[in-house]
Image (cartoon, rainbow, N blue to C red; front, top):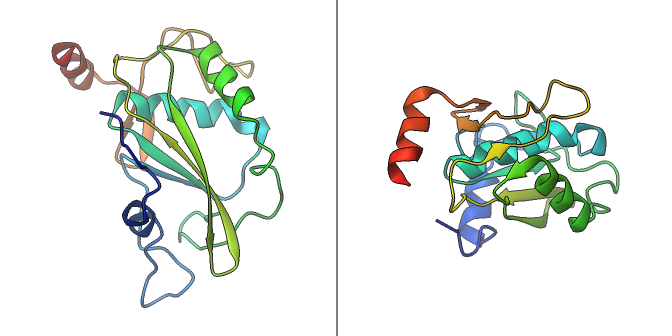
Length: 169
């Protein structure tokens, strides 16, 4: 089901909940709906859209850029690459590699004078979404695979979840 406002104050507060014991760290953890990345770069687009496909096949989810990995430190974006993300380019790349279309939204979030990039990938209305073209590196994306988001991890869908998607349809 399409989330009406994925960047509501409530949603952002849930993502950016700060530890009272360790200021500068998030208490949020990677999950079935949340993934953190330290930096954004076009060279990693295959990995990002693999996760996008997995979120679309599950319940939707966020990739947040500017957060360190383990512990989840609030680093902020160090350059303008996320700011320069062309929506047409990302949509084109998603459409080239997945069917059906993956709907997404982009948000810039500022916290304590640091900027964070947030991409939200909506839950697909027509599951399962299938990778129709492999990535150039031959590792990130593989033609014919269906990706799914499990707790803190993106992988090829397992039988139980695929069966559930098919039965729902």
